[in-house]
Amino acid sequence: MNAKLDSSVTERPVTRQTFDEVLVPTYAPAAMVPVRASGLDLWDQAGKHYLDFTSGIAVTSLGHCAPAVVEALTKQINTLWHLGNGYSNEPVLRLALALTEATFADRAFFCNSGAEANEAALKLARKYAHTKFGPNKSRIISCFSSFHGRTLFTVSVGGQAKYTEGFEPLPQEINHIAYNDIEAARAAIGDDVCAVIVEPVQGEGGVVPGDAAYLKELRALCDKTGALLIFDEVQSGMGRTGELFAYMGYGVTPDILTAAKALGNGYPIGAMLTTHELAATLGVGTHGTTYGGNPLAATVALTVLETINTPAFLARVKDASAKLVAMLQGLITDYPHMFSIVRGSGLLLGLVVSDAFKGRAKDIQKAAEAQGLMVLIAGMDVVRLAPALIVSDAQIAEAGRLLRLALDGIKAA
Ligand SMILES: *Cc1c(COP(=O)(O)O)cnc(C)c1O
Image (cartoon, rainbow, N blue to C red; front, side):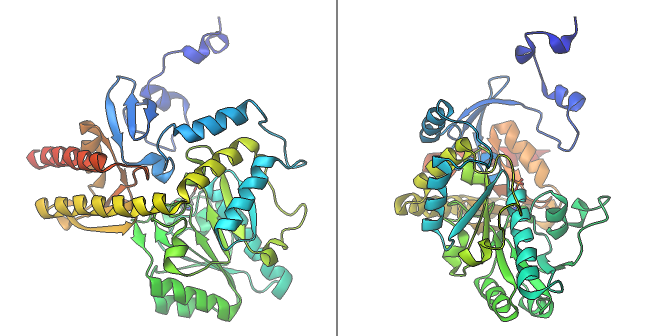
């Protein structure tokens, strides 16, 4: 009998080894395979418990299987799944109202990921410039070390050459400048620029917060040249910094904002938010995607937004951030040969390794996992922590205890 037709296929035993046999090897996942999770608690196939300080890369901000989200999604699952863009639906209409009421934006476009949200933002910027200024205003300015997704356009705009190597020919008229460098921005943003795209806090690039003066200067330069300012808040948005979106804390308003990751708490959804004037550029038929704003995704996102966007929830994120920073500062004091500084914003924090430990962030991540603590890295020199925003003081203390056990093991080796 053909094993692929075996009716028990959904219950066939699978292991980490299966990944190496039948998945395209774009990732190198951990040795353990998670099977279930709740809040910040997670269990693998062997029943081992982990405290999750990754939230699926700043995605499950309300925790795994958040009860309010499970309830809303379960109700929607039994009501209406999918229509396609020939029809609207109530959840997406409510979500668009809520997002535009909560932000600078007047209009929303929905898609399925951060890369697609940025793809929409960049296409809008090009089209707006074409329509308003003609074909010569097409240059896009982005920052080195930035990350904007993995479509061909977004890797080309992203500031990490390793992600475009071998995929040439690339989209044209894209230039990169050093992040937080005002002089470089002044030199690069001229009249031929249609858009400047920036992460208010660089995530994948090492957890580097933007300087307020820098982001303000980008706003001024865009106003001067007629370029659009795009804030990629795929990682920094939805409460991660203690503001609903990081731009609110900086007091710098973009023309276009992109969100994804925590917007869906693990259910795929992305959004591009913009003004009436810019949105008008994308008329009927100019852009789209089959699943964008489907009732399931929109229901989840609406529930997430309602939960996060309250003063008490956001204040607690800042409080938890202060406690996590204090815990990490304690590690720097006690392990000065391993770590140099803590940086980041809210509950998106990077513990930068010292010179003696350069390139070894992954070793620390593996040692933490062995102790039952999941953390992220951002490049080879930064241990990144992005717990769910509901993290408790006790869980922060427990993460500190597990990290110390992990670090002591490394020291002894
Ligand atoms: C994760 C990320 C993206 C890409 O999002 P996907 O959903 O993986 O396509 C884009 N920008 C930033 C800042 C991100 O952190």
